[in-house]
Image (cartoon, rainbow, N blue to C red; front, side, top):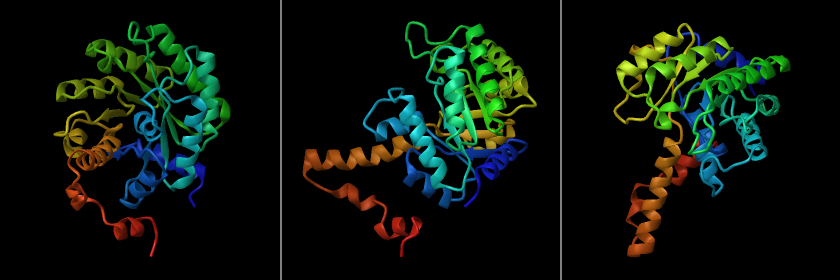
Length: 272
């Protein structure tokens, strides 16, 4: 079994050059299958995990998320990057306390958003957002563990499609100690290139928001890592819903024709 320190060293090395995909499992089974497929690192997904527990995204408490991160980290030999939402606190002190707890789960990386969850005020003001990243950085450093800090600017997901302001925030987060920068929602080559250049030499993470995006094209733009968020979970749920709705509405079972074979799944999970 790979040690936690080895996972963290591997994860940091992945961010030094090239481009890699960081797929997002939502439970132990999906994490183990992604490891079987040869991915080099994984990231949790707040939405995928929430749906697996019968809750909406951003409706899961910190204690449950910490238990989930601990289970994922123990289940695979790959580094796990935690989707730690907004740190489960508004004030920097609360963020720091929760980040300290997250580091203890065995994760190799952790992201903090600047979104509030309040539709009337979707983003923290810039000063507070920056202080929250500084607090997360200080908390990680205080543990003495080599956990990578990812700072996220959620403006494009909240309707504030201001590239210059997003770039300024990411640069400030980088200066505050973030190791990797992330603005989910950007999609055009011009947007991506602008942010890659703005945060360089630190790496930029891009979320796949268009199915036409490719690893090769993003790598050519200078993207260092690629996430899929809740998309794999949504794809799995789509298969489930299509089959279940057919049964409920038509009384037929044709959707099962495309189902994965039990023998294949048992083999992937190490069975005979």
